[in-house]
Length: 432
Ligand code: NAD
Image (tube, rainbow, N blue to C red):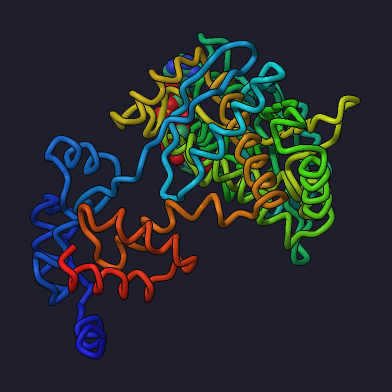
């Protein structure tokens, strides 16, 4: 421990020109700088040459890639069509829970979805306006000029039926200052849209300064994508869920989340387990979707559950979910990452709206799966097999040893690292 700490403290992180090096050169540099051996860090750089070259074009200072497990959720039927849904996640039980709940939802026809048009908002912050209220109205008077200038930036988007459609001007008071905030409302079609709307906002800044007689500071999209909601509902069969008591348990769990932000954060995290996994698998921006979702959860001024649960006349559970879903098919990593491209092909969605709807269906299935487990046998039982496998590997088990350690841990009822280490030592001592 001590020597590791000393090595860590001696690192000099100032590396001029690091970004100009190739990935293997960067790797060599960090090995030298860290004082660790090439073997200690080999996993950081273990990737094939083609993927390394792609990664090096995607972000800065690349030395390698991080492979995340990619599972395919089965059993989903959405609006009468079946889907095989790629999910990238490091968390055990997520793919299983989604697939499991999708099979229960199938009994009553699967998931029904709808979504808004792909509308994003770009914000332009005006500071120091002498007459903020009048400046606000002057911007509205020049609405068409602003829209025309925005649309000149992206003729392709306009040709596809998208583009800047409207403006909205708000007054925001903060720390004794008054900001005029122009919202540019843009239909981004099959794009996530951040680059598209940011380009427009930057191009509008000089005209906005001229109209308001003040200075523009920020020009950036809002991740509060509340005009781009995707919705899903599903009926889960009471018996298939485990009976009326499980249904009541899920409704109690939902009511708890709706009322208590401590519970709501975990409830919504469960929803995002499903959503983020598909967003990541398709090369979309997980942070953008997560920021939008949590902001939506607090849209009424108090953080609450994103989903709702109720009972139908027959006692079945009816789940609904509505979340902003800024995902695309044409830009970002979706266009550059080969795994994302294959994932989109597997989904066979026709547009970004259909992708958004598939994603919220997975979010609802995931949420219901977690609530069912919590309301019935508890979450740990379902988690245990995969968790035990991870613990066995963490203890150093390899090959055949892994399943042997897993089975002994489960029999013993304690899935803990110290137990796994003890079991592994025993196994090795006894030669098997
Ligand atoms: P992009 O600029 O790569 O693609 C959008 C462009 O593709 C459009 O402007 C249009 O000209 C063209 N296009 C071609 N076919 C289209 C179609 N069918 N529908 C719509 N447009 C089509 O990407 P983007 O979607 O504008 O931006 C997404 C990227 O921006 C993501 O990588 C995201 O991580 C990043 N980003 C996010 C934020 C944020 O969320 N705050 C900020 C900056 C950047």
